[in-house]
Image (cartoon, one colour):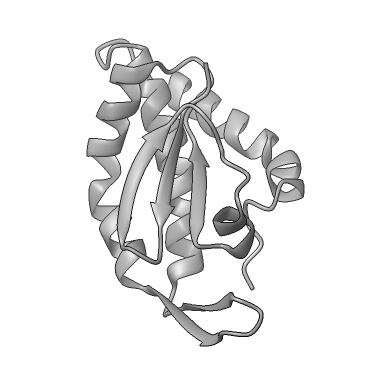
Length: 136
C-alpha cells in the first residue's frame, strides 16, 4: 500500500494518508503529497515522519499563501528562500527513511540507502510528470 505525507501550506499542518488526493487544493498547490517507499507500512511511515519533522516545519514556515484573486478563487503561493531545495530534500529523505524503517533500522546498510536513493531518482521522470517538482 502506498502512503503519502501531505503538507498543507494554507493551514501550516501536515498529515499522512493512503492516497495522493487529486482535489482542487492539490491542483492549486495548497496540499503537497510526498510519497513514502512503496514497501513501507503505517508504522514505518510514522517513523519516517518523525525523522523528517524538522524539514517539514522548515518547509511549512517558508511557504505563504495569498488569496488576492477572489474572483477566480486561486491562491498565490509564495516560496521563500531555498524552499524548493528543502522540498526536494524532504521528498528524498522521507522516501529513504520510510524504506529504512521498513528494514527495521538495524539492517539498513549503506547499500540499502544507496538503493533507495537510486530508486527515488529513477522514479523522478514519472514524479515530475505527476507534478511533484512543478513550482509556480
